[in-house]
Image (cartoon, rainbow, N blue to C red; front, side):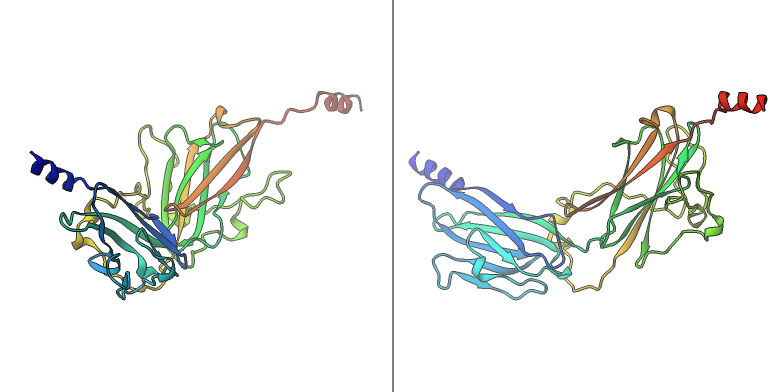
Length: 322
């Protein structure tokens, strides 16, 4: 009975192993990776080893001297002065740093119990500027078809764009089509002569343009229950969970130092304006641009409600009497 209890204690002596790592970092960032654990009973630590893919790049062995060992890997620059048994610090992130990282913790004899945790790290290049919004007109009335476009400058990976109306999710069934364009972004504004005439009071407006021909046909009517992108559009998928297939070592990418592959993101929005689309005579469109968890910027466009002009009764009387 005592022997069975001893074996049971050995199997649970190493507990609560956790890998703490960012899901994405920017080029040039310092990356801190943490590995936490709990040792119970008389167990002691034998080693902590760090891997990127299948390749070991750092290890900590408390019963050997020196305690730390470094193995050269492309894109990985270990800051030895700040790396310990429970953390490793990587300097000046490059594109080659991206990949799946593993922390392997082993207890000492007699159990040598080992646990491994992993996480995938992306290296991103952010847009140099905030997104921008333009629309066909500076004013709309209920029943009009509103068309707007949001552009986010080149990034790698390209930014994901989402829309809000008056600070809330767009209601109904709007048409949204999105594209990514190689850097530098292709200008799709038409010549000035083809632009709409600004309304009184909108002389300084910069939102008037007609880019839709550059994207091909854009469906005017919104059909219930359908989102109808053009054939040359790219619908951005929901962020995927990389813990699944990437958990297999065979899927770990070979790290390489790549040149920039930044592309711009463009999203076009079309929906039927309704009376409740306005708040105090204004309609507020917001475009949110995100790149993983390290970039979140937005642009906002305020559009006025177009109302019928009623002739002044007093002006009519004055004209008749004259």
